[in-house]
Length: 382
Image 1: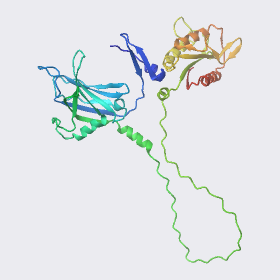
Image 2: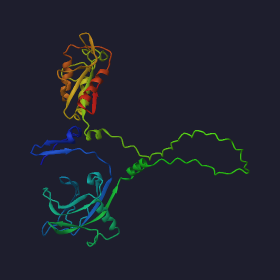
Image 3: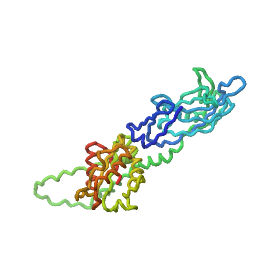
Image 4: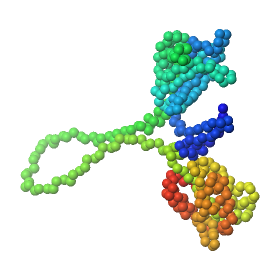
């Protein structure tokens, strides 16, 4: 029906982490990027029993099944099994699905298993379906341990229905979650509470063998001892939350703006001499342009509006050293191509290479822009 190519960085750079593209044959495909949470793999093996044939009198169906997850907009296919040809009591190969994708780690969330008759043309015929949960499949397998899976009266079998009528049964040969052991170990280690500090041992009071009371002294009032605040109980140990990743910031709505600062100081050599970083030869990219194009292409995708500031530093205009100046005629340029054009146009402004190499004013200019635009993250290319 159609297809579209998406880059993950382009999607993350779009508002809401959602990107849309039109298909050549019509229609629009929306793609959203979500953070993957490792929750293990769900291992499943099913067997159909006395499935209702939909191939007619002289042929048998070629059944396969799909596992669908519940979403806000309906059902999404997560897994499709290979077909078992000419068999109404098929035993399908083991399936392995990511728990995070299948049910988001919620084993009580509804999933649907749909069985079709395979057709080479792709117009597969519906044979029946049933709804359950990951927990329900695991429970069904636990109940059936050691039982005869050929027994259609098995209490753990799922009834397949088609248009409200029963069209066969499915039993669970395997249903379990693997790959969680290592994660549980890490979580346990994070939750471990440091051992309590041992209390000092106080020796029991032993009265002296003989006691001679001292002579009475005249009363002399004394000031009460200063109040001593009792020591506060040690707070309960709480593990530090995991450090957020770059994707966490982007997915959480952090605005990113790419700015480019280019060194025009004399440390780069004479730009008219071949082999120096700024040397321009026709349409060939020099070292600076190659770096801007390569790194800028990646980072620019995370900038929602693709408007970038381009600064220069280390050049001399009219005999005055400039530690920060605007490259190009506009305060911001559009995309990486705009950055490259602003860079080349700077050589037509009569600048002279100078020294020293000082980036302090450039950093201040970027910080001021971040405060003014409330940008959460500024990325530089120097």
